[in-house]
Length: 212
Image (cartoon, rainbow, N blue to C red; front, side):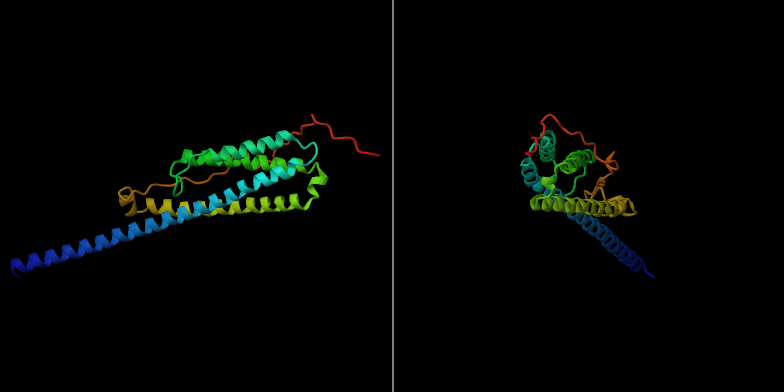
């Protein structure tokens, strides 16, 4: 075999290897992009259900505030917790990449969730309030939203796990940084979330005596 043919064979083999490598890298890139998009989509759903809860707060507070002598400190806590959620700075697009940023978001949402739980517990002390259709409807919506939050957080963590695992697998781990892909933080269980809320009644305002 002549040197020319050997060189052509080597060149042909090299071109084939380059094409295979390019296809492999392209496949890695496309897979990471797909998983990243799935993570961002799951995060969008998390934000949707949290926003639904936040949207329920004003109506719930207004409804409860109409009850005579209702614990004002409880309403103030809910209102303040909702405001703190709105002050958390998050990326304009996509899921957070900073664990501290997600932790801050979690903490604010946990405070709001705890405040709402205490409000509902306190409401049980006002049978006239809990008997109204408007309050019962808001309570049912809030409970349904809390369930959706739990579901969507779980789905987000599943999406993040798939994405983070793909980043660490060979050969994706070699190219992930080059493509601008970094691991995403998970939602974690909030400390004390397994305990019932502490309720402290404010009896500074005495209920009006019932008429004979």
